[in-house]
Amino acid sequence: MARHAKIPRMSHSVPDADRTARGRLVLVALFVLFFGSALAAGALRFTGWMPAGLRNHGQLLEPPVDLRQARLQLASGEAYPWQPQARIWRIVVVPPASGCDAACTTLAAQLDKVWRLFGHNADHVHVLWLGAAPAGAAQLPEMRVLRDDPGVRASLPGASDPAGVPLYVVDPNGFVILRYAPQSDPAGLRADVARLLKLK
Image (cartoon, rainbow, N blue to C red; front, side):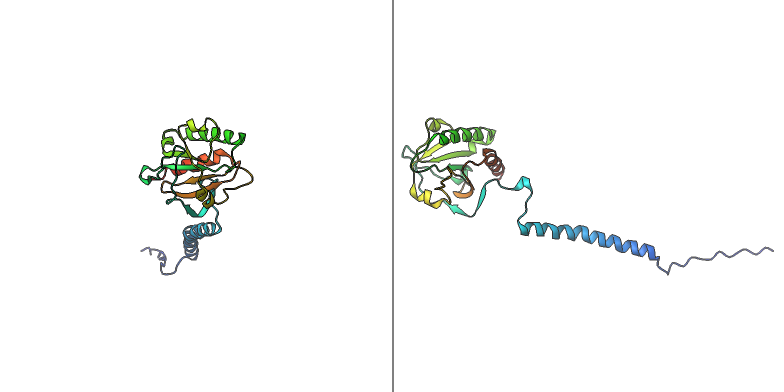
């Protein structure tokens, strides 16, 4: 009678060293993936780095300048109210108090073009010109010519810039949040305000 050969039984009690090592590597990789990316993001945030698409073109004012109590008046003498519920963003132009030259005429034309590029959101942007505006600028639909106000002028950082005419962005509540140096590229202003207009 033939004897059946006994097949040795595999013991499952002894762990497979290679499989254990691979499992540990997977756990380490998952740890690095989740916690490493969080640490990297925190480090970038701490150093102030931001993606180019989210970076402001204008100088962020910290803290913002509070103009809510400023009593702005149009050139006609009427009050210019903030009306936060209307969600109007403002671009404030601060030319020299002594007067404006041909550069201001060019700037008014550039701002008109920027305003028109806002499309259906253009009605939510006013351009406030502090003091005398160049010829024809007052007729632009977005333009609000204000009486010069030394108090407002003094509260705006860098308003008396010898390099030219600075621009400012004011939020719907009356806080000045961005400053643009003289001769700044209007495309940067347009990009910043267009992003702000998307805020609810």
